[in-house]
Amino acid sequence: MTPFVKSFIFYLAFLLTSLAILSCSDLGDEALAIENEGCTDPLACNYDESATLDDYSCAFEEDICGICGGDGVVADDCCDEGEFTDDCGVCGGNNSSCVNFTDEILPIFENNCTGCHGGAGGLHLDSYENVMSGGSNEGVVISGSSSESLLWQKVNSGEMPPTGNLSQNEIDLIFQWINEGAQNN
Ligand code: HEC
Image (cartoon, rainbow, N blue to C red; front, side):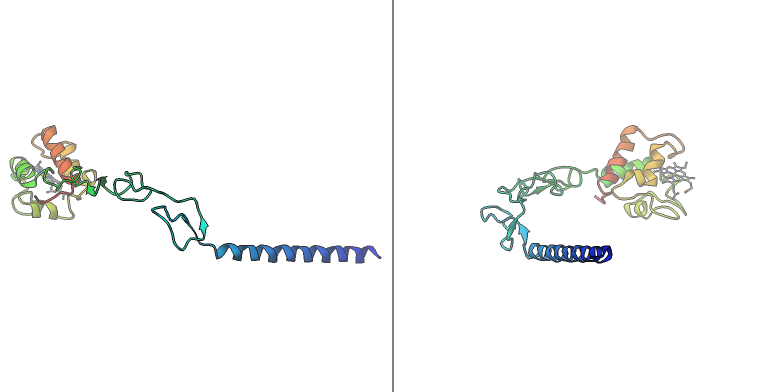
């Protein structure tokens, strides 16, 4: 046999072997694909009837929020059995303890702001609707985010009112009212 024929046979053998390996692994993939992974234990609370291959996800208890295998923390706002945290962080609350716009926020504006922001043109701070519709260009209160709200930025920096700062307590109330969703309550 000439060296050429030798290396040709060698090459052919190599080719056939790799073909065999390739087609085998193809078969292997198909075999895996028909398996449905999930929890296969009928006693588990997340038992998956259609599962044919156990994926070790079985859990046997529900957390206080009723979530199978949950840790009682991640469920959104769930704080106790069937209870949810309200906008002011009270478990099972109805928002009644949130900062009150009419009783706590509007008086701050009336005493410190409406002298300038209550007349013609620009920002009016004399009613909920006017506070929320903002100044000439855009909203000055971004519901839920005091740090993004121009109104809070201005009172917190002491820029507004120009005649003298609000008390820390008043600044904090505005902060809290905006973070609690700037409610019209
Ligand atoms: C002595 C007058 C005066 C008082 C009092 C005053 N402001 Fe202003 N305020 C201005 C002026 C002038 C501007 C700049 C022009 C404008 O945007 O209307 C301004 C601008 C603002 C802006 C920016 C408006 C925008 O759309 O750019 C906010 C927010 C604001 N004031 C909030 C307040 C708040 C809250 C109070 C009360 C705690 C207050 N201001 C009290 C005069 C006043």
